[in-house]
Image (tube, rainbow, N blue to C red; front, side, top):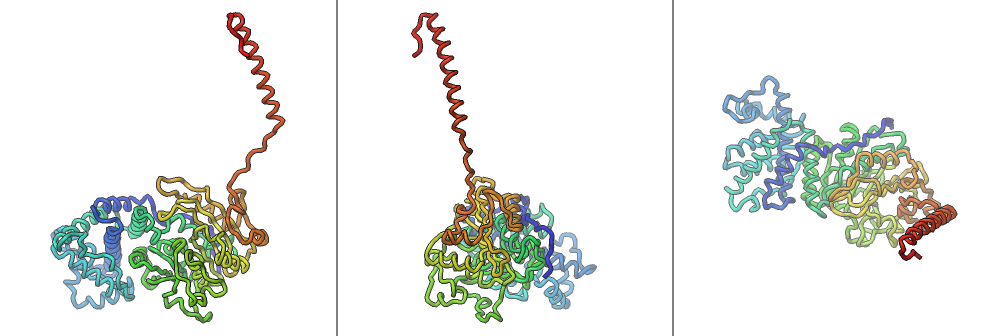
Length: 546
């Protein structure tokens, strides 16, 4: 396979200083009132998703209709597409068939954001009903693939919006009108809206504490993982791979990590994205996030189900000739998750030969799941708690086998307090089934970060240093070192990073002879000063100092 020799782009695709994102966050903070931030998140992100789908669809419709695109009459605030539908009822089926082929989905004019926003502006009493119909249409009829349940977590009949229909309808009118006014200040740039969406996910995660671990990986860390797996698997120094056919994140949360890989590779550089997510709310968020970032329904597949019990039929093929394999596997699974390792799981093809992770720490179960589906020419990068590096028992046996089989390529230690969900320091393990190098690269980046009020942050230069150190397998005192297997074996296969790369600086050697000379000199000066001082005291008739 050909490789591109250019250096990888280490910049994150999320614009953290997004003015639009900040504007929308201020709106969210203003509008949610007494509503829990997690609850309001679902409404806010769903409306942004509808706005994105609508803008994209209307732009495509305008291109396809060309000169037939109507101009509404003065005072007619309907969308031009609604006017066209009214004027050309017989042509609607052919038009929608064409849009399904070219855009991959259809939205009826009455469900477009512009139509919904106009209803909100005029305080239309049917807004709530129209939204319910629109969401149902998008779930079941818009796309060739079914997106059933996409809006299942958005309860428009919730009493959190109001005690009765009128109160809920009026509240939705205010929310949608305010969002629409905020969006009107910015250009209708789909990338801008995608960045704003990511910004909001991060802001909601910041306010969710430990819950944030369920759906959000900070973009700086995502950039490290995507930077690593996008490099040539056999020799990263060759640069970025030209193509990743299939990419898997088996604990995908909101899908940001998969999108980061796609962004780094370019939309034509990834064949298909595959994600799995157990939490229903986060699963829906991931599907919206994919579509909102311009990933077509044929270019991704997100499955709702338990990774550890392997509920996804796609991944249950045991025949080596038929099983699906991935060119890149990335993941940020729940840390030290409790699970139920059963006798049946001990015979599972993912764990056979390694053994089962302990009941209180499923970390290695997640790792072995992803590793099983990694292609021989692929790279896996997974975020883990430091405990997997040194804990004993069954984890020590799994770690030993992975090392003896030369599957662990690198261990990267990150600073503490980078995540919203935990303050503990974490590490990145890089694994391969077919390695060129017979050593393990250790990177200790624990001291390289920018301190923040709530969370610490990796700056672009910190991310770049980690990825480039990995890419070229560089060694640097107190930062990185290549360690041969003999040394690791002597340490009983313990991978504790500080055993191999300590950040402690050696204290300067003390020259005792020089110190003695300096003390003697000071003593001489003190005696001379005392003699002069006593002479003055004697002249004044005062007692001398001893």
